[in-house]
Length: 231
Length: 231
Image (cartoon, rainbow over all chains, first blue to last red):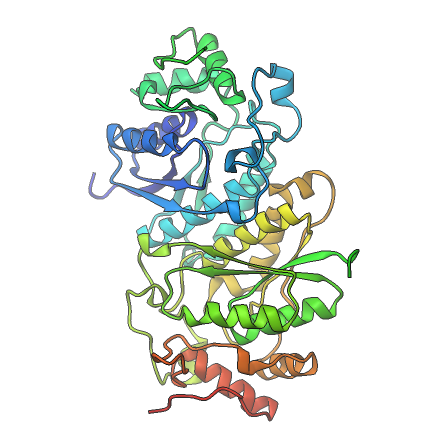
């Protein structure tokens, strides 16, 4: 493993980023995970990220505090109620209230700094254009534009090495993501997806993220190992 | 002023960003300043940013903590000695040890979040390609690539409004920047440029940033109002 290239993986602790970490490792990278505390309600995700990083053999797992609450403006930072029981059409269209302004851009920017310090030219992010079409920063054109900017922003770009933003889940359905992860040994019982878990950290089963997750397990023909608080 | 468009200005408290704030205001924007504490030695800059924001009539001044020390890797975050007494050629060539990985990308990303919350489509940054040619993220092509990415990242982009990254100092010499600022009423006695100020906050006069500043005042034919600790 010593001479394998290093990669930085954005790891939220959710299903998608855990799968992305497993994919990066499967492609032969030494994986360095990066998580954020951003004033989100679902801080339980950061604990999940730690479990996933350990289970999947990350070399390093850094957690960076970023406080988007100073700006206000999203359910995930505490200003708006998390919507529940929305149907697939409502989830798929429009920009969700759980959208955090510039979140992927901020997280990728920190990943870029981490990659530069590690002398890594590969960053992985688990964005998905199928289930999250409402998020502007989950579209393929966005990822391509970030990569282009990143190559101009850094020493790597100046020195002629190409920095790549990998988004291996971009065009997969949730069911395909889960099947991929299972084939790579991901234990989804370690992950956390809920926008609004209860005090014991149990997922609600009713927010958009839980509904997409449960639909994904149904598509994959598999049982979700998590225990839901469906009260 | 009520119906004028809002702009976000990255304000370090240095000479360049103070001038940039004055330019944004002169162009008719309601100015919203954004500063960072990023584990830098020169925290005195953040105090200067507060003085400048007040003096130049900022509507809001937000200070965001970002901790790049988790990654390591630069003199400004404490790992390497600040170089002193380098000549112009040494300052102008190569990537300086004071380069902070992905710093402008991270700061612009937070500005993007702030702009989105403010419903602003204009971000100002005081980067300069003349005196800081060694920094990859001070080049015109970088600013253009960030703007392109930003338009794909945000609601504004989806909704067809164009988000602009303004870099009004990009092609100005330090002397031209100072003359512009003086003509717009900037009090450079409120600003702070030094990478390594003493305990009283007095600039050293010998780091790259002080040397560029002093050279700029000389070019402009003006006296720097700051008192230096030249011991």
